[in-house]
Image 1 (tube, rainbow, N blue to C red):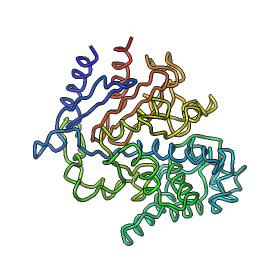
Image 2: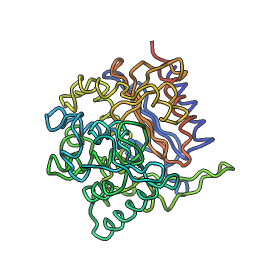
Image 3: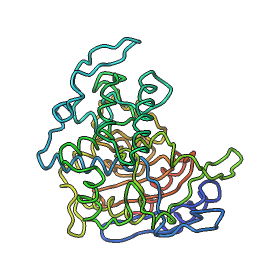
Length: 383
């Protein structure tokens, strides 16, 4: 039943949306479903395969937050610690409020980074702080390209020189908070973020095809990313890899990773199994329970914004199912995960030891159509 339903809906996705899609579903120690549809490269008629590499964009955030929580378990920081105890540039922050720069009412706490309540934004045009952040990102990127090295620490310092959009803890806003967690990891460990992730997550789980920068020998496996026109035509996007706004740094903890379906499923299923899989422990089950519960007050939840997030709260870097009726979801309370700019998606359910990873490469990503359907089909096929 599960195979038939998923084959049908994924075929529909490729007929009316993405060039190619892939999905893996695992429960306990079994693979319930794994299949691939369509093309990684339309022009060359190159099909999606098990070794196809994808830009996972914001699904990088989940990896970075797990890495940060490993340091929590090691006693390197408390979530309630001021960020400035570790990154001193964030001491005495200012807030831009009603056109005036004023003192922040309190410090940014490390927890504010995980929960996106820090006041740090993405670059954009909607607010003055977004404009200032865009400028910072452009300057750091120019340095990185020139020196061909990641500049997470410099990004952190530059962001701290700008005012915050709001007082820490007072609002939720998607932004560069998880990139700053990357800088925090670098300062605490003395390692680059990429080196830390490789040593503590990718290598132990044998995630051999997950990295910030794709090795030259593997670049031919990277799926093309396509823009879907209003008439349904798919046009190859040739600018996003070099000039995408979310890609702040080569080692962007918020958006920079590439991975395969199999690799990311190894990571997701380890969390679904309580943090330990095949003898490798990423986190304790206690820490996963802390991560995967809602940390936002009720009045802040509407700020999550995305329509398909109805029924979800927000934990430590992940959305968390807290209201099945509101979301029209048949998933378990406490099911958690995230998605990426090009439509990639993960959900994790430790109660059922269930995980699902979906990959595609398309803008706009149709996530509000695709992802709830995938989720509801999977849960609707379980006893």
